[in-house]
Image (cartoon, rainbow, N blue to C red; front, side, top):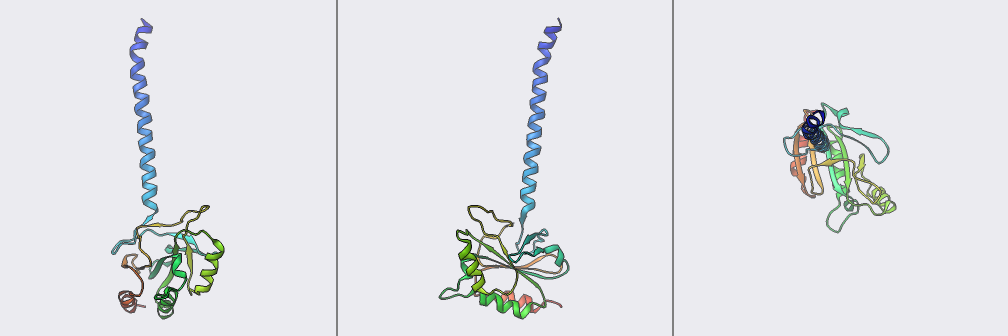
Length: 188
């Protein structure tokens, strides 16, 4: 009799264990999705991106939380823009804006793209003479990008105001009118 009851109860026990395992897997997957979403920085217009931090090329830690209550200007660009082309000198453009408005905002650059030669990258960065801190967000066979965000154009220009809200999110070079207007209108 005991064996018959045990045989009848056994499928129920097995199905409960499977349900518990399934629930555990679902919770683990939900946790992974939350972590992935947490890493994505939203630089869309009117968004309030999470605070983020990363080491700059010169070894300093940039933490956007350190600039709470201040304006942050972020330039995101492909490493190919470090070299002046026949029609566009991104470094000159960015340095001009930086030199004019560095007292009104914190500037940070984020370099992206596939980096297949560290020596060439370092040489191009040095020759570009960009005047403000840069974060190396390039990828290579041995490294992954450090920051994840929802912009896929280059160069991108983002302004986060004193309240933490994105007040400008534009793409492309040689188009500084809106960026400069926003920076001119910032309160000191």
